[in-house]
Length: 401
Image (cartoon, rainbow, N blue to C red; front, side, top):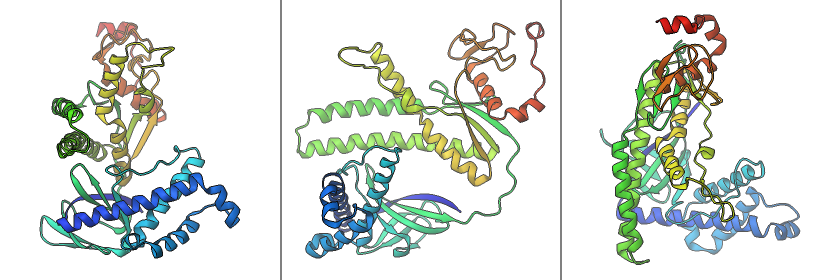
């Protein structure tokens, strides 16, 4: 069984948009009340009830809450129970050490609610449009950009800078896969060259467009800062800024989707570095007692790393390879850019610049990113490579060539 999320843009009427906002607000309220109960009143609950707070216990209290307040009862019970289920999963991840303590949901950031797949209906109207039937809301049109496959398990309605969207969580029966392709490739992810493959090819993020949008976003942020809080002008300025950032995110997401699809279709085994992006983009500001050094330069490097979307690319590539029967291998990134792919010598002096790699031992010269990608490929497929790769060239033979 393969699970896929399919996202489409909704085209609600004005009345439906108001209903969406009301649903999201009530679901957010239920989540925050349940979070406050678990965070501040769990001792009292245990003393009174004789058991800890659980998902089932909060569902029973939700039933009492719905009887007392009409505006909560107007929203379908499924969406509110899904919020309680999300909170229960968040606390389970917190106590297991996999995540931080849950935070309250905020208006404008957490505007979403979810239905069971069995409660909704989907119809295709024509080539470009379809519609989805939502409980207590009715039929809502959405832009049909691709077919919906498999069985719909959950349906999520969410709002971002571009408006309301619907996401279908589908369970697709795993079809009989053909044997994965025998080819393997190593990928070095960088800032100057986004993707460098071990076969010598490159794929670069459209940075000119992203930098243009970044300059536009900075200008809009300055305009937003000068607006009076609570004014309509500030609201419009904030919407313009959010739309600009959303456009940059769409460009990055489209690039990662296209490149991951091409690589997943061309190779059966893909080897990448296990990059700790959170550690690599940590601020160098330091503290008042021990201030950091080169703070502005490190901040620029952090932005450049985050603009590439390394983690997003690896996520897309992972599930696409899985669907094709391929394999994604992650290796430690240590010394991959300092190792000569010809003789195996390791030295930080081999890399003369960002793009030039020249081994001081065997005189091997190559693009630095391609050399690193070859090392990544060999580290991820080492047992097979030992049998198929010829003995490395000596220093004399390499220099003579």
